[in-house]
Image 1 (cartoon, helix red, strand yellow):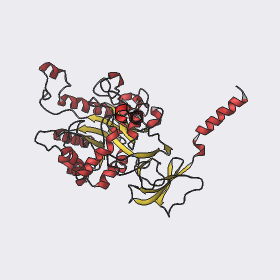
Image 2: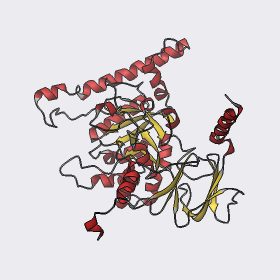
Image 3: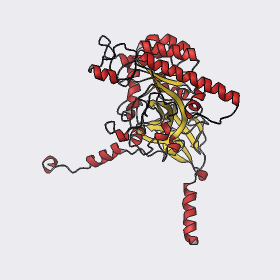
Image 4: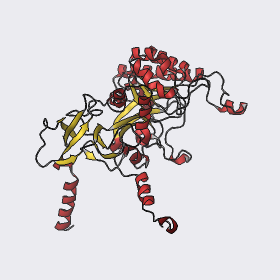
Length: 434
């Protein structure tokens, strides 16, 4: 290799190295810190991936040579956090080869969502273009499908995407409806469905009993020799370091999950309802609040019962918040993760205080995910993960103009913007042009 080629390679390497980090100052916008009142005409300064100063125009000294971003008339927010998705795990639901949300078997505590991530999923840029920069991606399809991960929505590999893993041990609480044929189908179809909920819960309990025994034996022997990957993955849960994230819909399921986690001494996050049906967590909101259990809500769902009002799901976050429950938002799935701000907007329109909604999209979500020391608010020392929006965050018409993830500017182009550019530049037919 020639000296010239070696020098060229060195220059490329240096250019890609973050050692020469630049300082960026966003000025003139309304800065929504979340942890403190908003600042009109505020300034945000960050360098080397971290926020350095946040304050009013006359309170912050902008370093010489800083890149200036004029945000006058704009709003600056922390990057949004979606706490229930399958981003990176599913592309096209009808194409089995693109679905990595579940594994064979009903109890898979050692299945890790992050290692199956597709960092090149087209759902990621579409979602981040609407302001969501962090998301919890969850396995599904079984009573215990595995562990969830908190990921950033920009990166080359799954290792680059992960911000916290394991985030939680996911449990889809067994359906406790006594009628196995309530969804229709014949006797043969009903027989092929999973075992009754009593059997499912007995197996779940047995797994935790065995994990407890494994932990005790491991401590007695003081060695990880002959380690079992399934039981090893449950040790942080038993130690209270990782919560169980339980999806439950009906009142019976919610109460059973509350009783079970209390009996076992487990930390819990409640995922209220199913993908399409509103949940009953609001019916026991006081108990949930007393236990300090946070709830992740989705508002675009139908009522579970024919006599319930059509807008019940829209009101659930407000009811939980009024009882003192920590509420965050999840869009569920992958293709609809892009509409997270609109999910939260419905909660604001149906009684949840706006500041609580905004917090649920940012700082509350970060607290539930255990990353509030880095994300969720615009405070000095935290990650420079933020967005600049041209209007009301909760309005459908809002447009995210720029975004940064850990200080690096994020490309906001996506398949959607490519289609818009293509078809907006299409020549008009001659008859229309006239």
